Image: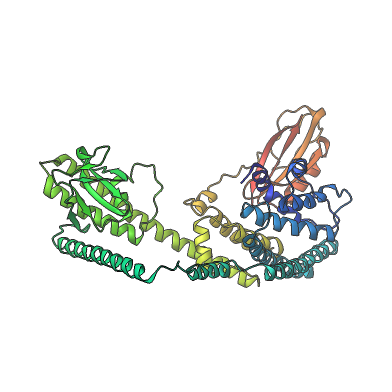
Length: 535
């Protein structure tokens, strides 16, 4: 991905905001100028053309029409797909994925339309006009995406099927005729080749039978057998972390075990016949033999079935090595160190399993609650239960949070119901933060202080319950009220002149918000005197 694509990708979440613009409003980004300059410098491509069209929304100072928004939304979807594929121009693969993205966007918009239609039934007259504009825009989006899907499908019909091409080419290759040879020569050559193949095949079968017989005498699950050649040319050497006197050697797909001191630059010196081949060794076994998984460098996950089998093979082989070589090439201390490490490794494995099950069942409960809300408010979710659970655990939860935000915005008016839904949302967002709900309950709420002295310079006494105000330069003073969301981000702000303190406190007491606070702004600096969190 080049620098231009990285810049666009960084701004893509902000560009998605064009989907939420109400017809008649303007749309502007902080990085609008950067995107405009970038588009002019980019070489001509599908991405450059789409960015050029999208950037036109920034120049509409009189507000965007439905047609403008439709065009910008289509550009946004196409840019998103190109960036996901890291392409400047559409390929057959990214063209196919366009249909998937259009359908995903249609699902989101269908949910918004359904909620808006229901919200319009109970909305005040002044809000109905805005809701109708939003409905008009979203219905236009649906029609536009349907048209784009039809265009893409038609385009795909004219594109060659990649798989069919590959199958056809693979079928055509064997049809090449071999050159004709004189019959007498061909017969003689074939006879000789047949004899060679037969002898090689017989020798290979004999070796395999010998190996199978030797495996019967193996003492460990690695099914070790002797290596009889005097030297071995290896491709890789792997140190054994528990027993430095020994190393693993690899040649192609074969794994060997021998003394470290016998490893030379040209190969392994097997004149003492110390080398053995581990015929059943797996990559998981090699990992346990060579890597200290408990040194804090690795983020461990619950062991898979193959990893558990590799773990057992590791224990079995190491136990066999110590049994045979302790006091010769291995020491008692090395054996004790291995046992201690293996004990800790098993404890870690069981701990990871317990955490994995705990995470799964916690995610299952959250998933059930999410689906219950979606069904209760007649909304659609593209993912099945298993996918939702996996995404919650992986914290890939953006679409689910968006769905819950839609329900909060359009349906929830009861105070307790809002608290429950916000709690579910926070549990999904902070899935890996332990005791989130308990910590949230312990957030201290600053209580107002009762004062009896007059506020200097204002000529009035505060009502009981008003906070103590600091001494401030009255000439530049303003009263500020801020409303914050659960992430402590400002969602609303109001400013009052210093002499309008009574009105400011009246508004503060009657405003609703997850967190609300009031204070003074003096020379651009805010000093807050009281903060309340919604129960």
